[in-house]
Amino acid sequence: MPRVTNGPSSRKRRKRVLLRAKGFRGFRSKLYRYAKDAVFKAQQHEYYDRKKKKGQFRRLWIQRISAAVRDRGLTYSRFIEGLTAAGVEVDRKILSDLAIHDTAAFDAIFEQAKTALESKAVA
Image (cartoon, rainbow, N blue to C red):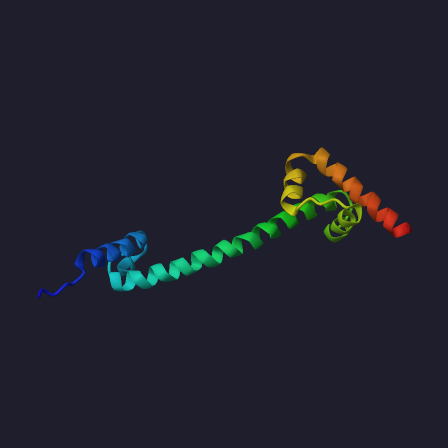
């Protein structure tokens, strides 16, 4: 009985790893033994950075909102407090976009938050 080496599928698997390692420096893109480790590590970074990207965008939106609100004479935390008091449920992504592209709408939301803060302080 002949010995089966599973050659075609092994070659396909190795080729797939080497294709993923294309663009890596030196033997990490040429030799399967090292490319395998490099690709595995790269996949770990891909997964982690997809999660990290969400937090980075949130921080960016908060910075943009903070800058827009400070121009109008309020701090970011007081603005968010005013939004919750007014019952406005707009997320930070939309607020950031409004602050950049539609200042009239952002001003209207800002005034709602400011009046809600003032009525909260009186009560």
